[in-house]
Structure formats: structure tokens, C-alpha cells
Image (cartoon, rainbow, N blue to C red):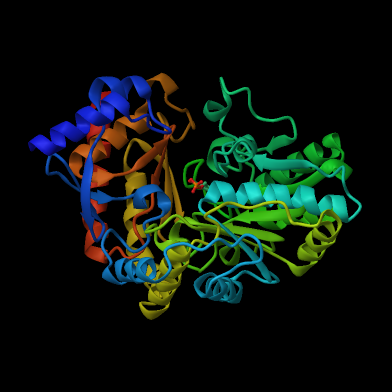
Length: 455
Ligand code: PLP
């Protein structure tokens, strides 16, 4: 490690407070310092080459090097580096991006708002639900339902909506208007003999019970990812979305599809909503919108909601919401270029093609004594680790088996993410078949390393 890298690590330990990190570990061991990347590979300050099996944070769709995206950013920086979208002002790139996104959006969306992050997009969705419900005669519909272990962001509202206890503890959260329904993890929670459809119907019945106990006239919306990423790459069980959407329709509850991770090809379709037949009222997206080269997110919704916003704007004199960097010209230029690239390389077609190798190699890991269940779609796969797969006996959480596999994988040159004892494997969407083979070999080796410790 050279002197500059040593200095960066020292400075990082001394001053930089890391989000979603163990602060003691940071103080004692310091960070893994990533210095550069190319394709699906990242490189650390110790010269290690690591395959990114988690796409950064589920965002690096086109890998770590792309001259066209860099040129798009530079070109825009040299033309118009900033322009507000407040006060009825606009600029060509953001108008173009709005039109383009609406052209791609799942059915019925006709309006778009821009922000810088997935959290802000979902936070905006919550605010718009509350705002429009005051215009359409439903001011008491304020409760928002998410799922246990779901994740939708880290603002006060979106983290309340997220079902992540470690993000609530000590923060005095969640806020009271946010409720959580069951995590549809069929493998873990099905009753012996219960089919997937029966399990899905039970999940929907739990959801309906929650709606009824809260009072349907107080529930504004249900937020969900088509397939859960933050709770550990969890695919919906058979029949789940049909059963859940029937409850939403029955009680006229709005459905917000969080496409922050699933959007732009991850599941083998442009949207996760297409993969599982979702009919959302609003859609949030971020991450791969700009291939992670620039922070930008979007929230899309229908004209009907916009009409209610118009009513309130007329009454108040302004639509009183927005962020300085909403619709940033550089973000918009990079996103437009990313969307062009997706089309030109047929990214969705590529995901479908390599997904066969990816899923076959993942499924082969189910023979490993640590792996109880493997489920995936596209380039998105979750693996459940268990002490005894047949008895569905989990490991003692204090053993931190998921973290053990994650750490061994890192030593073997593969970045994976453990959420409890679920492993998420979701490489950049441009990954090639031979790179999948290398990553899967490293994954298997990491499982062997962990097995040697816990067997
Ligand atoms: N929604 C989902 C499904 C996410 O995975 C994330 C982040 O990981 C967010 C929302 C929040 O996005 P951001 O971190 O950009 O605020």
C-alpha cells in the first residue's frame, strides 16, 4: 500500500463517519478503500481485484468504466452545470428525460418528478399521497404500509416505512403512521405441507387483517418492491402479487412500486412490475437510471393524481415541495445517455441471456451443505443459509454465518452482501458469462471456507 493510500485510510478513520456501518469496527480496522474499477471489477488499496457481485449497492448496471457516460457528464458540465427546476424554470435535458421515462414507464404513468436518491423519490411519493388526499376528499387516509424487512430509504418517513428494526432502534422510529405487513419468505415461514399459493393467500389475508384493524379509510398506500432487495434478494412466491393486489383493489388503497433496484433490467424485464404483473399507481426509480454515475431518481404517477396536485397548488398558490438538485442537468444528461446505451446494447436481452448461466450456477450451490434455498430471476438471486435445510433449522444468529460467507467471499475476490443469513448476489447487468463462472467459483469457495468453520 502506498503512502497516499495509508494517509486516506488514516483520514477516513479520523473523520469520516460511515453510513450503515459498524462504527467500532471502522475505528479499529478502518475501511476497505476502493481505489478504482473497470467492468465488473473493483480494486482496493491493497491491490486486490474483486468481482462486484452486488453492483455497488444494486446500482452499477454498466460496470465501473464508461466513456460515453463520462463524456455526457462533462459535456453537460461545460454547457449548463446547474439550473433550478423551481419557480417554473426548466432546461432541455430534464424535459427530454421526463418524456423518455414516461415513454418507458409501466402502464398509465404520465407525470414525473425528479430527485437525487431513491429515499427522496419514495419520500416524495409519501408526501404526494398525503397532499393529494387532502384534495380528493380522503384527508384521513394517511397510513402507509410497507413490509417487514422491506427497505425504501433513509429519510425519517422512508425508514419508518422500511421494516428494518436496526434502522429504527435508538432513533425513536418508526413514526406512528407507518405499518408493516408480513415478509413473504415462503421457504422460511411456510407451514409444513402449505403450497406456495396457499402461503401467498395467507400473506394476503394477514395484509387484509392489518388493513381492517387500522381501518381502510385511514390507509393511503402500500409500498413494495416487485422483489425485495434490501431484505435479502427475496423473490415473491407464486400467486403473491395476484392475492396482494386483490386486497389493494378491494379497499381502494394506492400501490407504489419501488423500482429503485428492480428497474432498468435487473429482473430480465425493464421493470420488475412487468416480471410479476404489478399494476402500480406510482413508480419510483433511481440507481440504474444513471447507471450510478450520477445521483438522480424519479417518481412517476398518473394524471389523476396530478389533477389533485393542481387543485392544491391553485388553492395555496404554489406546489410547496422540491429539492435544489431536482432534475439536475448533469444527472439528466447522464441518465439520457445511460438509457441510450441500454437500448443500443439491448441490456434487457443481455440480462435474459446471461441469466441462464447465472441462475444455473446459483442453483448448483443449493447442493452445498450451508445452502437451504436458492431463488432468483434475471441477475438477481437470493440464497438462504440454514443449519439444517430439511428441518428448516436456522443458525444461531450470533454465529453470523451470512457475514462469515460475505467475508470469505471478499477474501476470495467476490463482493457479496449478507442480510442476516440470506446472501444477495446481483452483479452488474453487463456481466459476461465467463465472469459469472469466475464469480460463482469464488462464491462456492467462500461457502466451503465458512462450512469448514461452522460444520
Ligand atoms: N428503495 C430501495 C428498494 C432501495 O434498495 C434503496 C436503497 O438501497 C432505496 C429505496 C433508497 O435509495 P437511496 O439509497 O438512493 O436513497
